[in-house]
Structure formats: structure tokens, C-alpha cells
Image (cartoon, rainbow, N blue to C red):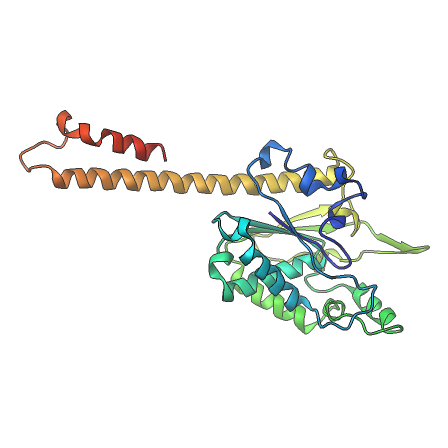
Length: 294
């Protein structure tokens, strides 16, 4: 699993209710859950602090490239062939989509390992507050490119959506959207990402309305938190489906290997010798047992 934070977030603080380590649920709660005992968990961080002035040209394309690059060079990920599940909050979901599209063109082996993507309050069609934020920032300094790209109607968002749709067939897609307004100040509250923008609208997409605002949709009080249980149960179902698919493949490999052994054995026996003669099977017994233990 790879967790990707959003605008103004961090690889740890986005997923923590407080600053204490015990609230960092991807690293503390999931590993202690039996349903995730064999799951490796990673977080991806990048510079998304819109409050500080910077002169870089960082945008969604560069962030996606960075994610693909780190996945391709990480020893724990690049040296294995395990399935990948992504969880993105807000803009992090857009970074994941861009990275997946780039991988489909640049690293197909990596792209083929992606099994599911979870979107938590991701503005697929932009967020109205991004335009407000841009206007505020431009009173002091130029708004970062990635903030401008989040404005509804953005050409960048449209291009990402069009490209992603062409490659998303076969992926498990889960969209979690906020239903509570976020309080940004005294007397100011609003949905940061409205449900229409937070849902892809694909036929097989799974949609989950959450009793949370934009911030609390990925931060939880405890493992018993209702919102955490919704996300946790969905992830557990995805992990189990991956395990089941792997088991089916293993059974197929076993059957294929056994068929090969039997065919080879038949081809080496004299025509006059019945295939099921007990003495002729003995030399193959250890081989058969070995295949059945795979």
C-alpha cells in the first residue's frame, strides 16, 4: 500500500489525528490488524506547502513523475512483483492518477502491478476553493502551479481525467467523499470538494459518503472510529481479493505443472507399458509431491 497526501499535507501529518505516533494509523493500526499481516505499507511525501513562497515550477506532472521514480527505485517495491494499492487524499489522488498514466507509458511492468486506487476527497473536476486560494495568494505572491491546476475547468485536470479513463479498465476504484462542511474560520464553512467532483462516475466505481469534512476524512480518533472502519473494511476486502486471485493463479500453476509431469512421463514410457503401472510411477513420486507443495 502506498499513501499519498494532498495540498499542504505531509506523509505523516495527513494521516494522523494528532501529532502523537499512536494516531498515525497506516503505520500503527493497520500493521497490528490480522487482515493486513502480510501487507507492506509506504507513504509518499512531496512539497505541497502553498503557504510559503517558492519559485519552483512544481506541478501535478512533476509530482507524478516523482512518485513513479521513487516506486521504480525503491528496493522493497522494485525488487518484488507484489500488487500495489494506492490511497490518496485530496490532490494526492490526482498525483496518483497522473503517476499511473505515466507508468502506463514509461514503466508498464509497474503499471500492471496496480490493483486498486482509493480516492479520499479527491477533486477530480477541481475545487472552487482553489480559485479563491489562488486569488488570495496572488495578493502576496504568485500562486503555485499545482494550486492553479485545481481550479474547476483546468485543462490539466481534463487531460489527466481523459488519459486516466483510457487506462483504468480493470482497476478497483473507490471514492470516499465528504458530507460535512469544513470550518475555515469564524463564520466560514464549506465543502472543500463537493460530491460531484469527488466521484469519478465510472460504472464499476465504489462510492462511499463519509460523515466527515475534508480534513477529518483521513484522520481518525481510534480504530473504533466509524469512518476508520469504513476505510479499513474496504481496504481489507481489496487485500483479500488480491490474495484470492493469487491463490487461483497458484492452483492454475500447480495444475499446469502436474499436467506437464504426467505428459512427460507418458512420453518416456514404452508403448507396451501401461501408464498406471505402479513401478513406473515411483520415480516421479517425489517430483509430484514437490509440485503439490508449491
